[in-house]
Length: 336
Image (cartoon, rainbow, N blue to C red; front, side):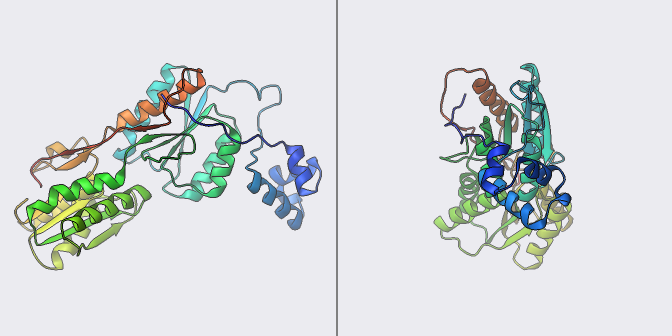
């Protein structure tokens, strides 16, 4: 269970109008029919809204004080195995408690996350769940103004917006480096998606290798969340650059599976010539040939704990620490 400090005071439409120096009707038009408002007036109203974090209430006045029994969650992707188990367990806990889950997909885009958060807050959910800790200032403003329970998942911070359930991606990368460095390969490399958490794992990996005296680490970057095809293509580039004694950390098991396929297509020995470590311990990872070494994270536990944090707050139960570290572990199989 989790706890947090209270947000800022809610701002009314009348107060927005006063600060912008216009009427309440003009503010309403700026929100609902902006094309009917003069550009300079629209700009003034929007500047005040951005500064205050004001979110219009789309519910009728008599309904606004009632509980919606709705929890909103914003995730980067629903197609990625990385998040699907989290979503399933989150939904299961909420449905069991009589709540419904409203899901938004940001596509790893902070601007899209802001649009989704604005849209769902206007419908007054009872709580909101976000993926990661990095948000636009506008997003942070409207979240603090909303005064709702908020859980940020899949990452950790000593100062979350409200509550956090996750683990240190940087330390996960360091753990991979500690496993691979003693294998004494000629080259060490990384294939990673360029999302915030993937970059944290990369940074931890590089730092961990540096601690073992390994400083030249070729990096291959793919679009988040990464694919089998991209893993194979990036591994091909690494192998073409020379040297057959290679250790590679991939930012997901799917990327690692593609990298593994390229190594096998070239008839190279695993892990003697090429060692591979993935991330996530997906359902297929124990059944690749050879089985994939990876970092295991309890993705379902993240969703379950996030839901319990929100439900605890909504039910007025005793307050407990606001940050939960679910941890991770190295799963050593035959690729490294």
